[in-house]
Length: 187
Image 1: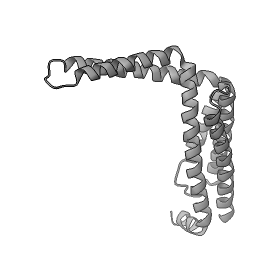
Image 2: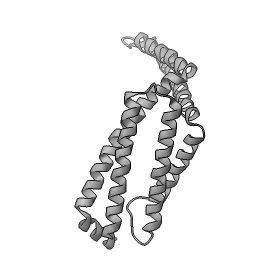
Image 3: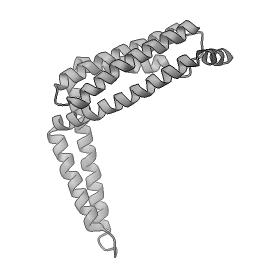
Image 4: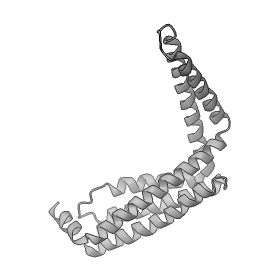
């Protein structure tokens, strides 16, 4: 069991270090080709998904406190989708975000107009902010590549933070491998 814990922690740390590098590239060079970023993230998701599925298969007799098989399958499928068409997924996400911002702006404008006759209500500010939302949403929808760059930077930040947390968890798990082993045996 101790060997299994060591393998899990070492592979988790290695993949997290790779993910931090990917995240840094995404933050520092967002203008880099979205195809490259999509491909790199796709390869990472494939490797991560494969690793989780192998962990799930290798530990069938033990209780693992998360569903590695499901997480691995989802990660693997997302990796395949990104490798098949790395740019389209980011652009689609950008368009969906743009439409969501437009709908939110329209709702804010409707709220503002309904408050127009209420004394002291900041309806003009709400109307202005709703209009700004509508304009931004249309812009994102019409030029999704720019939003894709923002998504790339935000995704890079999320990957970095998640990977740092994962490395911390793996180190703690390795330091407490005896306790982890006892906990797994109790369950």
